[in-house]
Length: 98
Image (cartoon, rainbow, N blue to C red):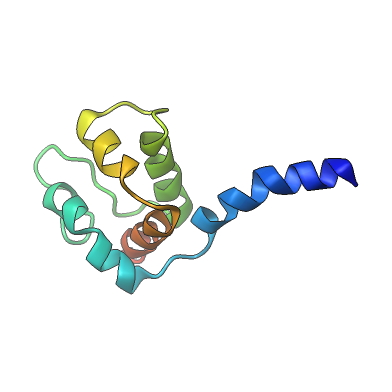
């Protein structure tokens, strides 16, 4: 029983970000994202395309930037300010584009 409580303390805080986000709310929250990645995630200039990526892939990338596991000055700064709900919603928005 003790191990179950310990496991729940690790898993439950992470569950919000993996929940299905709201793509409509994500569209509003993605204002900074679309400046480089495009309105539909098509990428602008040399900026990476987000179209075609799954919601889970986008969540993982944003979490990696947020927690410093991936390094990019702009993305680390932007992602550090996102809540788990923001990440879920933004991921849902861009994933809905394909």
